[in-house]
Image (tube, rainbow, N blue to C red; front, side, top):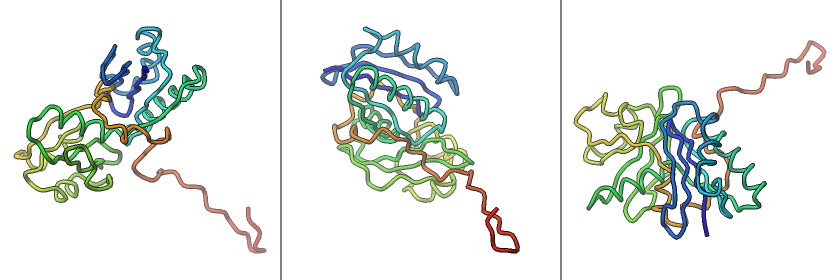
Length: 215
């Protein structure tokens, strides 16, 4: 059974058709904030226009706009094709790719660029399992929270190495094709955004006049 994988949680925009843990076709570009312009075109470039009975989409954490673009597209295609739809975490995807790329690595931390000067971070152990919930922290707090010998992966590592150039780190963006490396339990999330922090906008407080009436 084919699965269309959609990845838009960071500066990368990528899609892949996979079946039986094999990549049939893929597209991967670093687009910055251009996900909305490129995503549907990239899907259309895949065999059969990317059509598949299953869709897997990155739910985050990562770019607020990118995540919403990917999930909106995935929901629309799932509705139109009658396809099943599930999600996965960008942190787990990078961890799976990192373990696959380094022989003998038993523990690592994934660090992704967050908002407001923070990074999203989560620790993983091999075989792939999370060792703690993900957090959103200032880089200095994130650096203090992980052992000095723990390798770091993700597009947020530059904030960590700016504080400590001796840290072992690999700048890495998620790639839809790496979904073949995800154990099944990491590809069953509900297709809703994982933003990683509370929204900045808050409902306006109600004003009360001298008579006690809300305005």
